[in-house]
Amino acid sequence: MGRQKAKRFESNIIQENVIQEGKPLYENIKGAWNKEVFHNSNPIVLELGCGKGEYTVGLAKLFPDKNFIGIDIKGDRIAVGSQKAIEGNLRNVAFLRTKIHGLDSFFEENEVSEIWITFPDPQVLQSGVRRRLTNPRFLEIYAKILSPGGYLHLKTDSESFFKYSITALNDFGAKGLIETTDLYNSDLNVRHYNIKTRFEEIFTAKGFNINYLYCSF
Picture 1 (cartoon, rainbow, N blue to C red):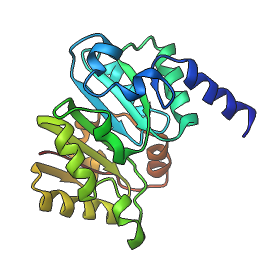
Picture 2: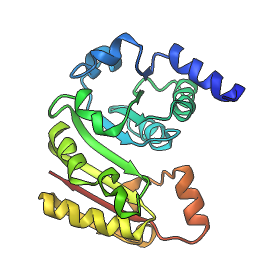
Picture 3: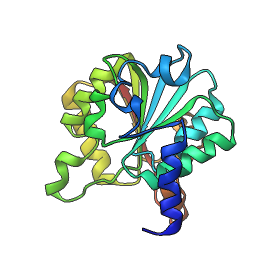
């Protein structure tokens, strides 16, 4: 492990805005995010596979009356987002280091008001279907932890993954699904608040269209 990566892992142990295995709250945070982490009753928004937390931090700056949690298994990436939140004095930001398929171990039913999935691994091979973040097994978890009428947002450059997601959401019974295959030239452009992840910067620079949808359950 490189020196910089090691420093980031050490940072996660120290920083209060990072919840990970080995910390007391990791085993007891379910249903207690507002009370134990944010110390308010504001709505909770998740960014799944948050990487370095571009959306988590970006949205937190725009919406101080909401709480934002970036979720990823990569500790070195989370450490970057954690530091950005600290530097910005953003007390409405936290990060959870865990795998997405265990979300319902950390959130009660209806505890979350919104979920963002931003440029996940599209798992293009058929063998990876169960790992796609819009696979029905994940949708069941999202529907469980989202409050009634809560939104799911998806941004991706992958046309095949986007088509798969639309079919999966429709089959699951998602409500009010709105979609575009060209976000920046769509009326829906305003809904993503012009926040770009590192991957999105790369994709748009290469001329790829960005696919976006939102729906509720």
